[in-house]
Image 1 (cartoon, rainbow, N blue to C red):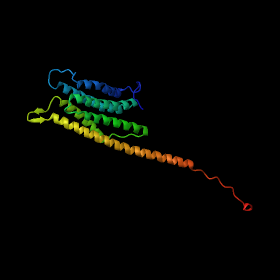
Image 2: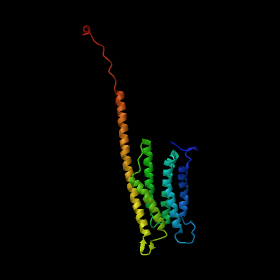
Image 3: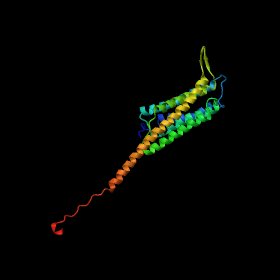
Image 4: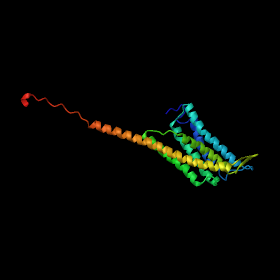
Length: 235
């Protein structure tokens, strides 16, 4: 794997951003806890946690872009990037169970975490079988909805709705709809990923069995030794 830098293998800017995202996980949990200090104005905790989560989530795209642009795609980065993403999103939903239980129920977090475990397990099996499964459009949509739903659920802790003159933004309603929509899309994307995995693993198994059968048949084939010619006197 090409490192693209003269330093130790794996130590580059994209990987540093990925590791920074992992270190931000406990900070996010603290910001969504009762221990976060309040400055005295309403909504400070919700706004701070939302902005922090958005910035950290954006860093996921930044490190991938830099890795491709700078030619610094490493094995370490390929390992840490999905771990950082799963830690961030799972910890956010777990923290939101306590932070805003009206919007985020425990079974929501179970769906999110279970989906990530399922996909990680299928990816490991696919890797051992020698193939990969590309991220689908449904999976990319799931990621965007997760970010939006986390921010909406966080803001809904401080506001039920926003009033801009005659225009009203139902923050709580958006949060509830976003969370349930996220749960549905996460489930569908998990099913879609499993179907794609099953098709490829079935095809790979069939190909391997066909190759093994051809190898066995080729070994069984033996050339018939030439028979000695018999002359007329031997008849």
